[in-house]
Image (tube, rainbow, N blue to C red; front, side, top):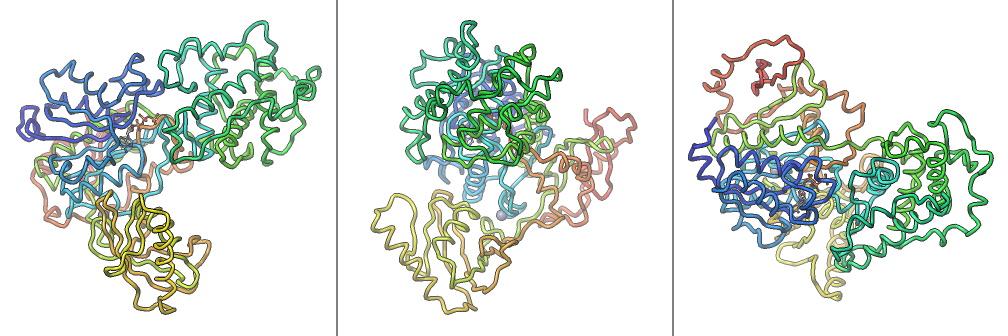
Length: 635
Ligand SMILES: Nc1ncnc2c1ncn2[C@@H]1O[C@H](COP(=O)(O)OP(=O)(O)OP(=O)(O)O)[C@@H](O)[C@H]1O
Ligand SMILES: [Zn+2]
């Protein structure tokens, strides 16, 4: 390993993308490892919920740029190095191919597929190696992507990662799970958990002065206020007032549907207290966990999707029951999916928020499943992953191709294995991103419209947001800032191309798709296919040049997203299987295209230090050479 004074480290110009959970650890580790020219891009500002694991940030930094604060924090203990921060989206056109070309290596600490794809494509276009990473709870991985040598980030299809940027949760939910996270992590915690724990429940108005302290008092239950009044006040604050406040920030809603504020008086009549629950004869029982708002309101079926009014009644009733039947627990509660009242409260709150944002409502049964599956970010996983990123970055800088490893951090170490390095895969010859071969798109050209192709394939699968589609030299379609009448012409052209294809198309029609924003161009060979198995191919179209991952890529399926404190986790059942990752069919692994099959002397040296460890508590690392399946002590 190169030492801190090594020229490869000192002279390297490194670009880090993301200064969140992984990014903070990474910046610190890079600086302490001797890197001295680090550029860091992050578009976000610091949220209270980041503070438990993004150790470069403090309470006083909330609201400030992550990239800048991270830079300043590290410069305090490494004042002589150069750190350049950009408070910006990596997708900004300023960060173009020429910008990327300036760097020796790019390191990702991102939390979403879209940005990861974008960076992958720019790294390929600029021919700069990329070290990519992700964590979910105790799981994590680091992968190395070097053009022409190892597979690119998109060589294999990835299941969409399930982590949510904070602002999605606090301000712009678009899926029901975002509302669940909000209800569980923010509203439930604020009302029934530790009051002193700051959280991002309140919408910060653009007027910074009006923040935190007095706003927090809103959630306090005043002694002179009956519990129904209190409930309605909270209701109006979080579903009414906060939404109005958020709406006042016009910028946020430019390209989004505006939410609708909901006040309790709009959904519930004033005499609702009388109808809500049976105040005298609650289904009181001594066991707190069996108190239920549903039983209290005579609602029996957990699979029913409640109306907005029913959700509002459940919410207020659950809140009342917490304050009357489980008073002693208030202040110490954290969400537990086996706590019926907590699940009722969270379901109702999530549904009301969903109604406000135009998101379909869900039953308690469904909501419980979603709420029980959210995994918390683990700071140590981020630290381990950041360390591994630096190790791989150094190998990349030294051009130690034979030593590149993709490393998986496992949740349930089996046979004392916590980290599992495997040799990187070679590029997928039919990858539409890093290979020249056209992708084959089979569709029923009689029925499918090119509009569907654009939506389902070009945008959803190929991840091109601003595609430009050509058929030979004819421009068929262009997304982006174009005049409405042009859009109509393009749409018509697009339809025409499909309509004119002889049916059935046997030879295929070649479309070229370009997305300058993503620096990606690929050819699509369209072929007619009459029948589709709607269950397997629900879109009625198949990108067959881009195969689904085979079982050999099981590890990659475990590919996780990153650093989010709130993510839909692999289910418990899936996690159990992680034990098997250690024996992921090494035989099927593809080798690098160069001479990496040859025994490597450095590896041989390593193996001399291998030792068998019996102590269950020792962490060991499986050596990259899986054939030997040797263990190495990690100190
Ligand atoms: N397109 C992008 N351009 C720049 N930075 C980005 C982009 N997409 C994501 N990021 C940054 O990547 C970081 C990912 O960090 P992390 O996964 O820890 O998320 P977080 O937002 O800090 O926390 P949380 O887990 O609560 O969402 C974030 O700081 C986010 O701002
Ligand atoms: Zn690829």
